Image 1 (cartoon, one colour):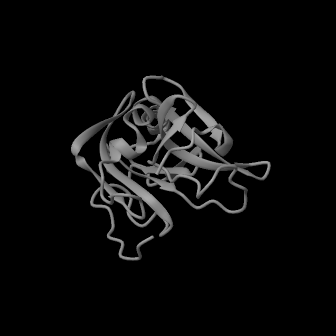
Image 2 (image 1 turned 90 degrees about the vertical axis):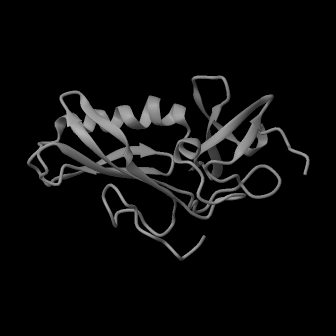
Image 3 (image 1 turned 180 degrees about the vertical axis):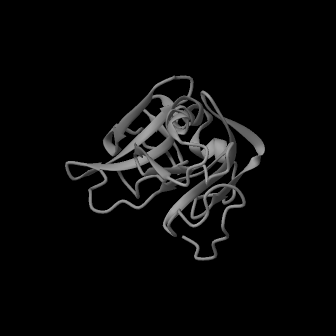
Length: 182
């Protein structure tokens, strides 16, 4: 993980820890039903990923995950934020994904930051090599998938993945992955 970290251009600054591997910041318009995201009011920082750095946020978070899980949860919380408030809401998501939003007393905007933290403490990986990082591609049985998160359950490291072509997010462990040839 690099120590050369720039801050996000949009969103709530200074919230994501140095251990965050992907940080997505945004300023959105507050509506009665939640938020409207503006394409030019978002910023993404990717650090510590293999094999590439600084790749598109939507690919790392997975467009499916953003549209079906993360943004609806942000919308639900944003509806309850008072536009003149400086109260910060922490949206519980799990799987190493953290999200904070705040209106910053702006009377019409919602500022937010979400990040992925690949830090896994304890736990045993049940496959050869190191556990994949968030954003890595894996094969679960016969389907290719994107790793959305990591967790430890009863002493074993698991992955949260989104399989290509499916609309489901599933939990898997190392033994359930199809080994890849180098």
